[in-house]
Image 1 (cartoon, rainbow, N blue to C red):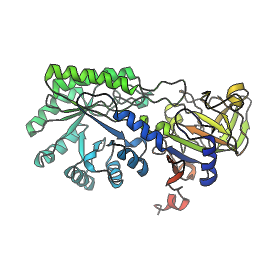
Image 2 (cartoon, helix red, strand yellow):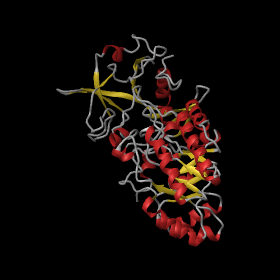
Image 3 (cartoon, rainbow, N blue to C red):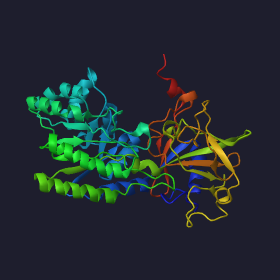
Image 4 (cartoon, one colour):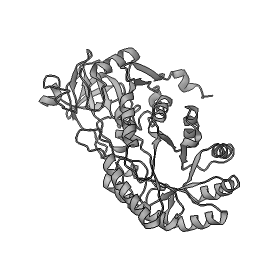
Length: 443
């Protein structure tokens, strides 16, 4: 078996099998990897109870939602559409929390209120949301949570920092006194206090935010019973990256929550909401090499799936592993050189350094490149030189790829999604879009 990396059992032969059976490009998600990461998060140390909510914006496929819910996780939703989608997947509304930038009006306001009456947990994220929701909550005996903007944050890139002064998520600390005063006048007490400072950032900042958040809770929300430290747990897509140590972060949170109890007499239940950490490295994009080109400065491989299946390099300067697989299923090169996976003969390009190329897609867009640096410049990556019709697999695409891709750009159709089941079989969990489906709403 030519396994691609140390994360999953998905192999070079599996990639070829998927490509031949379902055509390319396509996404594959490893069921065992998803369950493993769910268990890891559920086992995070905590003193007084833990709720793990999956940030479903990372990957909203119905089958993925069902798997994660069956593993014991609740759902973090960012829109009414996501709430509806999770509920249609069979997840009860009481297991869903909505934290959103939306300010629903008209029919959407009625929908939100019906969801809340049926068990949906709702966080207010602005003073306007509070003003529009307080009377309804009081009249129906409902609790509200509140998302706090701490003024500090961290993220994989500037655009993934959701906590600093140039992000607008939550009620800013400067408005908390007014929020508490207004809620008190209405007879509301916030029981759930939420923060999220960014995605894929420094774990040390994540620890520091625990201290910041507990100080805010003590000052403004003494009646709180649950504190959410957000998601953003750092994942390692590339071998030179370090993922967050969930156990160590949990031990730190446990210690600080126990100290909070000793000081205040309040046992705060803990909540986290990982997305990327659960699904990123369970996902692969399987593409075919369509063409090879050359300029005076660079070699290029042209694959049949680029920014329309993975826009993260273009948006964030994110780096994803690329695996070159021969048409007959041999792993020719990999970012990962584990001795139990590859030997020198298998990793021709990676071992000998004889070929470097820029991996580009088929879109008419200069940014359609899977090997961009943080400044958005195309860079050549070390790999085995593929033949036309060989397979190029992009790793780490389980999160924020299918759910965030501009898949109809240049009138390309949305790629299908497969589940690589624990049995080793493929299950089609999203069909390939047709051109007719793309056009059906045009008048």
